[in-house]
Image (tube, rainbow over all chains, first blue to last red; front, side):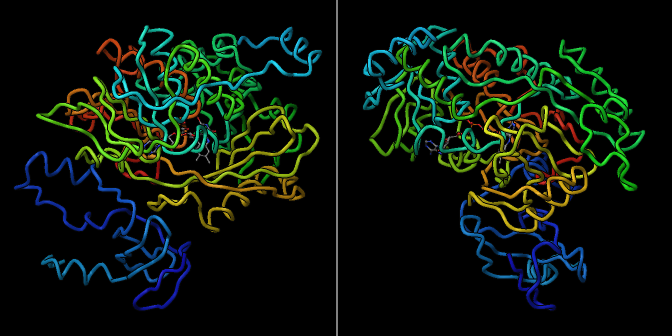
Length: 94
Length: 416
Ligand SMILES: Cc1cc2nc3c(=O)[nH]c(=O)nc-3n(C[C@H](O)[C@H](O)[C@H](O)COP(=O)(O)OP(=O)(O)OC[C@H]3O[C@@H](n4cnc5c(N)ncnc54)[C@H](O)[C@@H]3O)c2cc1C
């Protein structure tokens, strides 16, 4: 798989490590979240067959976090964003 | 029809005209007591034990494709009971004991071959960890032997014992571990279940559930609706997809594991060998091919194929520990999609829907579990109680803080 890095251009997937579903960006507030919210955040996944948004870390590159939208049926990479931009757009400041 | 040496002789002398298909191809009935979704190793062994040990008469197995099209026909056939944790080890030892009597039990040659499994270690701390694991294995009644470097050298002279980076400092050896002809396991269980009245229905994908007032009353399938008192999911790498049809989200991600086979070679490997400093394991099939594999690819996928970086990683592991493998030519490679669970351990449990049960999360190690998984699932379905060796495989264990995390890496499926 080739990951189209928004800053560096096409990079081999071997340079990255995968964390998992991009929903991990939306961490519940530990001081206010319910038990169920924290449990689901930590342990439960949609795991869809088809389009999946996921967090990739460019460990052997510029060490940026990316949100890669990819098909889990064909491995086609559909879209790549900087995770920073995605998180900011979702109202997370850091 | 019973298979035996006498039967082969008799058929051989009479033109082999008496052989019959090993199982029927029935059309689904409108209703069953128990419907099992998924005709892989676990689904078929569940049906077999339900009929044989628990006297269930009206059972069906619904398989989307053909028997053996999933991971039961894609794995690298290793069986062992060399786990550390109490939630796992007694279960896997129970499974190994079932393997030991399986061929006589279901009257089918599954080529169960206890040629031993050798886990190499490369440092003192790793050897200490293996000693601890070996002791845990013995506590469950399994066998384990700690070998020193000289013994490993005698057993496998062709390994790179003196590697500067990863010298072999010893090994954990389980003589009762080994390999089994994987397809024959599916076929043997299918035949045994069929003989006891189980309907095995191929090309019959389950497309939905009939759930009313929190109760599962049956399934929708490619061959029409089927009613059932109990419905048992058993679909290995597709668990999240099938459970989603019942409105469930699981603590599972689907990942691909690749496997490789070389051209046929003369006998060289006595048993299974695993590299302790990288992801590589190898055995030799009875046809002579070196069967090997390594790590999962690490990203969510339902495509039954992997990518080249892992191929390279596996080959590097092979070259690091067994340099002579570089002379062998690769014949075939393939991939299979598995449930990777949040703690690397499986589930055999009921669900929040009454009458709906789940068997899932077997990661890359579910083949060895096939007999015990079926037995324990059948126990749960028939008696309503978990089998004593499978009590820890609860679906709510993350809520309870009762994870079974052999590797201790936490809720990160691609690291298990
Ligand atoms: C490359 C590779 C190597 C492995 N090596 C080993 C090993 O050496 N040792 C070991 O112990 N384990 C190993 N494993 C793991 C092991 O193969 C699996 O954990 C185990 O086979 C899973 O159980 P199963 O046999 O029931 O799965 P499967 O054979 O995959 O059965 C599941 C079945 O469900 C069917 N299904 C899916 N959806 C539906 C639906 N909607 N309706 C009806 N049917 C459906 C599928 O078609 C499939 O036939 C390996 C796995 C892979 C991929």
